[in-house]
Structures are given as C-alpha cells and as structure tokens.
Image (cartoon, rainbow, N blue to C red; front, side):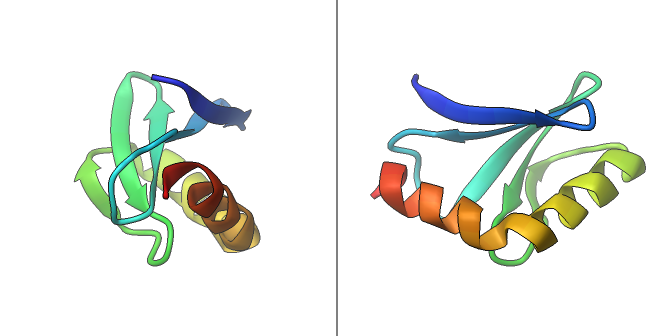
Length: 76
C-alpha cells in the first residue's frame, strides 16, 4: 500500500494512501507500532515506549496542520 512517511528522531511516521477514519498516523519505534489520532495526539491502537510517545506528541503539536493537510489530500 503506498504511503507518505518520514523519520523523526529515529521514529517512522507514516500516513497510508486511502486509509480509514479517524485521521491518524502510523508510528514505528524500536519494534513497537501504534496509530495516533492526529486531532488529539492519543494512541488509538498499539503501544509505544514513553519516550517515543512524547516525541510523537511533540511532533504532532508542531505539525498537526501539515499532518491533517496530507491526510485530507491522500485519504479522502
């Protein structure tokens, strides 16, 4: 499945084309996987180490609009 992704501080952040609601990012960190709700920053599926979760939340705080723009562009 095609996706857009990036790596931030060792954590992979992906949005899959044509994915389902709610808008979310897929996170891969040191063998852990999770889906994080873009709007709330909460884990909706999976688990992450506490440090990785803090990094993702901080990234979302700075890039929430960008993530929603990409979600709307590729997942609607």
